[in-house]
Length: 230
Image (tube, rainbow, N blue to C red; front, side):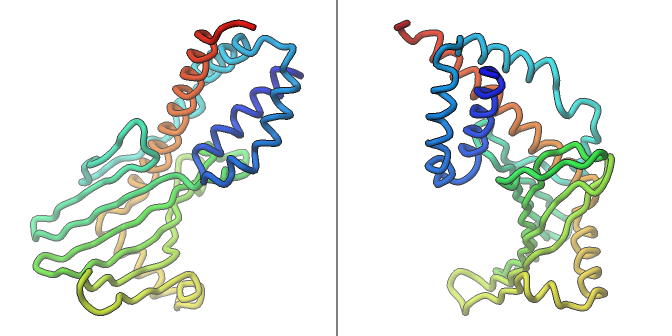
């Protein structure tokens, strides 16, 4: 009971750290209750047990890792939550994809593996133009070894010094003709946003978050190991 309480608190703290700062304030009472529940337990041993469990039971072993295709990984810091991919066409057209995990985990169904969906921004710039076409997309697992993306909003950014940009949000896309919506998705697929890429985003980002969680546990373990005993 003591160990399960601590593990629950640790994971909620990591999720709060991953999400917005205001979630940490919501978890303060939970943390106090969790620490009170384990005050008679061996905190360091429980931490070490959780680390061993995470390392010996990798969640995403053998899953579909996807493919970058013609994109190159431009940014992927171990400390950051996001990644940036870039693709340059022979014509000079540039496509940039930035992505990070959604802060809230989903309820996993039997055939799903990844606990979090991803949010991706796809920016397309034509050569010789200052304007940018930007799509905001939800990337999610659609079945075992497969994934998909939905366009949630779009922006036509003329430039930083010209007239205001045009925005097409959730309401617009909820009422747009299905054929047009499908055509826009096919347009992004033609730019390289394929199922291979969405598989890559989900796998890479979820693994990245898992690695960060284990590293966070190790830092906490190191702090506890060097703390003076009462």
